[in-house]
Length: 266
Image 1 (cartoon, helix red, strand yellow):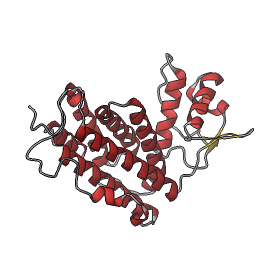
Image 2 (cartoon, helix red, strand yellow):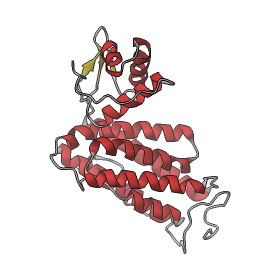
Image 3 (cartoon, rainbow, N blue to C red):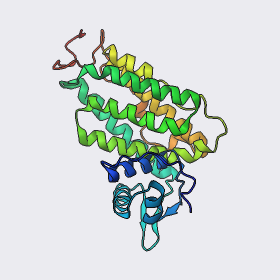
Image 4 (tube, rainbow, N blue to C red):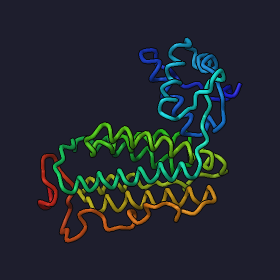
């Protein structure tokens, strides 16, 4: 059976459909379910020790999200994402993030700054996993960090779409990263530095670091995939002047209820 080597993650009985879907999503992100892998509802149900109904529902959910492909009479198959697929995913991420940052520069923010402590914990976990080269841990920690970051967007639909794009990015990257014998120090680990820029209310610095992160990502994956990073059309966005940088005399990141550009906030 294709999936026999997967680790059995604990499944909480209060929400089997979501729990199985979440467990399989992390398997896909980490590359433990490799592109081309095929499995049936029965195999997944047996793997997690559940009935066929929640297993089928979870697989159908993932197929509806484009993370699996339903095969007539053959169960479900993990799609193989190409470099072209990744570029579309990456460019969508960059353009949405760029738009969100520019919106922050001209509007109000009701962000709950008490969430910074949680964001710091997420950052520490993600950076620690990256430095240790623990891919299986890294994918979950990194995703949870950026999910926490999405609180600044104050738009659940946009946050969910960005999360969906991030899952696919990891699905593309995982096979190249798993092929390396040593991952320690290979992946981006500046999560903590990014949080401190946010804590200092430094929007231009935050924007600059997110752009640096995106540049790091596309260059690393181009190298691993044997492609050219210049094939992406959004590189100019990543090297442009950050929002709020021109004439900014101090920190300009929004505080709750404050209008950006009104000066430093306490």
